[in-house]
Image (cartoon, rainbow, N blue to C red; front, side):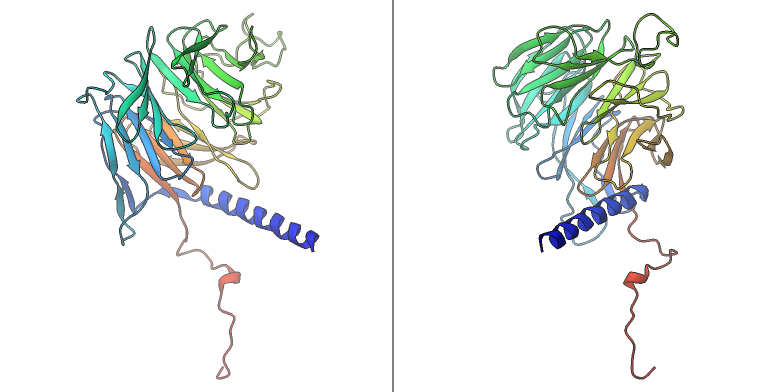
Amino acid sequence: MLGFQSGRQADSRRLRRAESTRRILSLELSADRDMQRIHDSGVNSLDIDTTEGRYMLSGGTDGVIAVYDLENHGATPQYTCKAVCTVGKSSRYGHAFSVETVQWYPHDTGMFVSSSFDNTMKVWDTETLKPAEVFRFQGNIFCHHMSPVARKHSLIAVGTKDSKVQLCDLKSGSLAHVLQGHGAEVLSVRWSPRHEYVLATASADSGVRVWDVRRAGGSLFTLDQHNGDKSKAAAANTSAHDGRVNGLCFSGDGLFLLSTGTDNRMRLWNSATGENAPVNYGEVSNKSRRKGLKFAVSGGCSSSEFVFVPCGSSVAVYAMHTGQLVAVLRGHYGNVDCCQFHPDYQELYSGGRDCNILAWVPLLHRPDAEENPAFKDSWSSDED
């Protein structure tokens, strides 16, 4: 009995993973769902809450933060996702310049964090839309990130124009620690979804470092695109890319780390060893020269996870472990700067410099496709 039950559970997981893969491979621009246009200039960052999967944050170059309700509350299939609240420059609490990153507090929707080129990072109370805490820095803030799995710390990693990585403690409201090692501004920071104390950081110095923030000195290792083979290195210094590294993203299980650089390359790394995996994604056009690039990775697929990368005015979809370009999503009229994947429904949202947020949804049925025999009516009639 136990073996039969285990087999049924395994079949259910395989079916779910296969369906997730099918849905991702059929993504297309939604004909039924629009996003209310709030921003007057480019959309820099998107984030969907992980508790309900219902609310999405956006941050724009115009300094505006918006909260969208993604649910359809009407009786018709066509609907517009409305912004339930916004914070702009007209608010006494709003950011003065471009909002570069927005993120929900990982454990509930009562709080979110934003960071801006006005040198401040603000922790917001969602109900009152007032900052509960404000952190101030010396220079532009390019990115911040909170750990999705942390239970023993409440640190926010912050990348600024300074080469030092700043760690801010939500509990104390103060700067808790500084990580030194990069030689230029820090453009991307990401906590591991597998280990709560492991942090990856990327810099304009062409380097990517992986840290255990409990260690007093130095990073765990520095990623090397040549895997330690100095005869292949173009320079004496260890580098992950041949240009500025402006994007990082872990796979859902935390076993792999992806990086993007202004050398128009994307690389896959073993997050435990730092080894550069032999995956060739070809040329990955990178238009975000002066800021971070927000890309996303799928989860729960049967064969390989998929990577969604802004490439000019399109979103390129790659198979993570083979490097195959499986789709190009076209719909924006300007460069795309951010992507956010919704793992509950295998949907994708993208924000661009055309001021638009687009929803990409699975095509559930193709009228011209052959019907699956499993769903055909096999009943017979005595009259036949």
